[in-house]
Figure 1 (cartoon, rainbow, N blue to C red):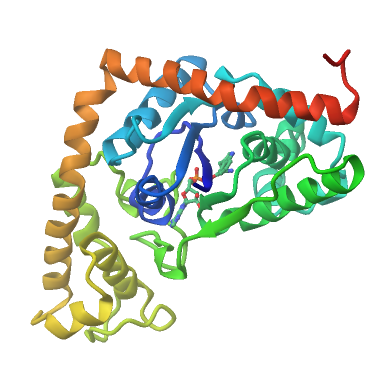
Figure 2: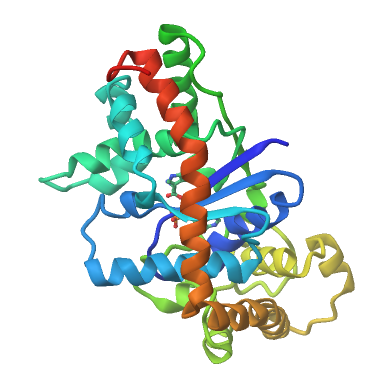
Length: 328
Ligand code: AMP
Ligand code: TRP
C-alpha cells in the first residue's frame, strides 16, 4: 500500500475551498492507502499566534478531520509538535537547502512582501514541510495547487540528499486536485476563496450556520447577461457557483446545466444554498459530537504514538547517513 501524508495549519475558518480543494481527497484516499494526516502547529507559528487560540485551533482542525470522514481506525491523525523528529529533520534539511531556493518561493514572497522584519521561520517554512513529508517515507502528498512549488522543493531536497549520502529518502509525488477544484471568493470571483479575507461573505466556512450560508450565496457576485454558461473567464461568478454546485452534488456542470429550468441567477443560487446546506449538515453534526470529546484527545495521542513509530527509524537512518551522534 502506498503511503499518503498531508497537513493543514491549525487556523480558524476552514472553508469550502479548503474542503473541496484538498480535504475531501483525504477521505477518498484512506480506502486504499496508508494515510497520515497532520495538524501542522509548528508551521502555524511562522506568523504570530495567540497561544490559547492556537491550542483551540489544533483541536478544531483535528475535529474537522474526523467530521469530514477521516477515520482514525484507518488513518493516523496527529499534531506535528508531538513528534519531535519533524523539527529535528527540519534542521538537517535546512543544511541541505539554499537560501536562494527558499527566497524564490511564491508563498514566501507573498507572506513577506512589504514587511521589514521577516521571520526566519517564514523563509524555512517549506523545509519543515519537506521534513514532514520525508520523515514518513511518503509516496503521495494530496494538496491544493498552490502547494506545487513546495512539493517540487521537497523532491529536489530528497534527490539531493540521496545523491550525496546514498539512498536516504523516498522521493514523493504531489497529488493535485483538478483545476476545477479551485474555489473562488463569492464576492470577488477573480480571487481565491481565502481564510483571511475581510468580508465574511466572501467564503463559506465548513461550520457556518444555514442562515449564513444562505446570505453569502444569495449575495454572491454574478454578472448581468443572465445566461447560464460555464465560462470562468467571461463569467467567473456564475462559473464559480456552478463549480461549487458540481463539487458538492457530484453531478457534472454539463449535467446540471442540461437539467436546469432556472428563470434567473436567483434560482441557481437558491438551489445551491440547499445543496450546500445539505452537504455541510452532517459535517457540522459530527463536529459538535467530536470537538469536546475525550475521544478526540485519545485519537491524537494514539496518532502521535503511531506516527513516532514510523518517524523514529527514518530519523535514525538520517543520523546514520549523516554521521550524527554516536551511532548504535
Ligand atoms: P491553507 O488555507 O493554505 O491552509 O490551505 C489548506 C489546503 O486547502 C491547501 O492544500 C490549499 O491548497 C487548499 N486551498 C486553499 N484555498 C483554496 C481554494 N480557494 N480553492 C481550492 N483549494 C484551496
Ligand atoms: N504548507 C501546507 C499548506 O499551507 C501545509 C503543510 C505543512 C503540508 N506540511 C505539509 C501539506 C506536509 C502537505 C504535506 O497548505
